[in-house]
Every structure is written in C-alpha cells, then in structure tokens.
Amino acid sequence: MAVIRDKEAECPIDAALSVIGGRWKGTILWRLVDGPMRTGELRRSIPRITERMLIRHLKELVADGVLDRHDAQEVPPHVSYSISRYGRTLTPVLRELCSWGEAHMKRGPAEPGGCAPPPI
Amino acid sequence: MAVIRDKEAECPIDAALSVIGGRWKGTILWRLVDGPMRTGELRRSIPRITERMLIRHLKELVADGVLDRHDAQEVPPHVSYSISRYGRTLTPVLRELCSWGEAHMKRGPAEPGGCAPPPI
DNA sequence: GACAGTACTGACAAATTTGTCAGCTACAAT
DNA sequence: ATTGTAGCTGACAAATTTGTCAGTACTGTC
Image 1: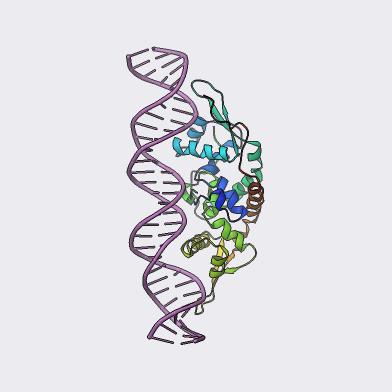
Image 2: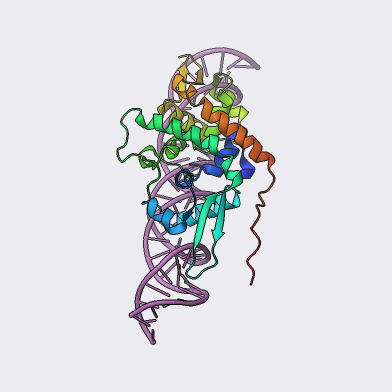
C-alpha cells in the first residue's frame, strides 16, 4: 500500500487511510481492541512481524494519537500500548473494515489459517 | 502504505485494507461514489495522479470485483468505470472512513498529552 | 501529412517501505 | 566478569510502489 501521508490526502478517505493504512497497522489495532498489551506480547502475537516494524508502526500510531504508550519506568523496561480515547473514535471504522474483510475473505478461494480473534 | 496482499492478511481488517489500501484507491472510490466516470475524467479530477497509476489501480479494483469496467467498443476508445454491485457492499466502510477522516483532518497536528521530550 | 484525442502498455529510474542484523541501556542474577 | 532481559535504535540491503517517458492503435481535423 501506498502509504498516504497526511499532507497529501486528497479526500477524507485518504486521510483516514493515512493513519490506519500501514502494512501491520490493521493487525496491531485488531490485537489491541481487547485491551492493552506489552510490546513483546504484541510481537509474539503477530508471528511474521519484525520487532523493527512493530515498533515503527507503534510509534506512528502513538504520534497520530490513536494509541497510548505507558512506560512503567522500570528496569528491565515495561512498556504497554493501548488504544487511546481518540483511537476509540476509530471503533466504527474498524468494525466496518472487519466485517467487510471477513466477508471478503470468505469470497472465492479463501486463505486457510484464518483470523481468529486476538489470541493470547 | 503498506500494501497488504490478500494472501498475507493476518486478520479481516488487513483483508479489507488489501483491497482499498492503495495510494490512490480511496480517492478513486471517492470520485466514483456519485456515479460512473470515464478514464480521462477521473484522471483530470485527481490532479496529481499519473495516468499509469490511475490505470493500474483501476485494474486492481476491477480484479478485486469492486469496480466494473464498461468498454463502449468505440474508436476513439470510450471506457468508463463504476462501483460494482459487490463494491457497493463497501459503502458502510467508506462512509465510516470518510466521516472519521473528515474529523481527523480538522484535528490539527496531533499533540496528545504525555509526549513531552525525554527528561535528562 | 502533421497533429490531437482516447485508453493503455512497457522499460526504466526514483522513492518509499520493509527486512536483516548488530548494538545500546540499566540493572539483576549467576 | 559474564550473561540475561525488555524495549528500542541505527546502518544497510532487499523488496515493493510510484513516477517518468516513450510508444501503441485508431480516427477526425487542419
């Protein structure tokens, strides 16, 4: 995709996609809808993501105000992420994306290995 | 972004984003919600898109079943695109993306609390 | 004939995104 | 002194996406 940067958005749809349109951002938000998770927990729950990409996307989502980052200021580090108050305004968007996506996956030769709701 | 290819989708949200997540796909769909448009009409209505990208995205959207392509079989060519029946199932998704995107655009540069520069 | 309009394609380069891999911090346990 | 931990960063390469530019086919106009 196709990352659309904020300033380039031609229409509201693009503006929204510029926030949630990264390679792993949908998955990350999907994991977090059920509650906060620690960095390593997220990483383990998304098998094919690399730590680099996870952290990069988390930073972007935090910068966009969609996620909150909680640092327990401990050693070793203890950081967790959760959907922010502003991020929760995305709920209807995510719900529609999710239900359409479910139907779309069932259409034609679907890919096995499904998309059960967030494990762990 | 971040194009997510169908087979790689980890969750329904990704599956949906794999269809509408291209650099210009949001804009294209946005232009077409009001009715069919010819290729050149679309191109002129999206100032910064190149013909190459427009056609490439149109082909992908047609391949995903979201758009219909009508070729009048005339010379010079007369081709128009419209949202297909299946594509219309995207309407609620687009509506939510659009209204969230509108609100997001009005929300100046995100400066969420807690983003103070590192102490030290 | 030269040129414009329309939808589209292909080769290639530039830009952007992602992956790989090493290393950092600060403390605790061995 | 060495190793381990959790979260994170930077350099670099690979992969992917996008832009640039030329060219196709056919017809109508000057």
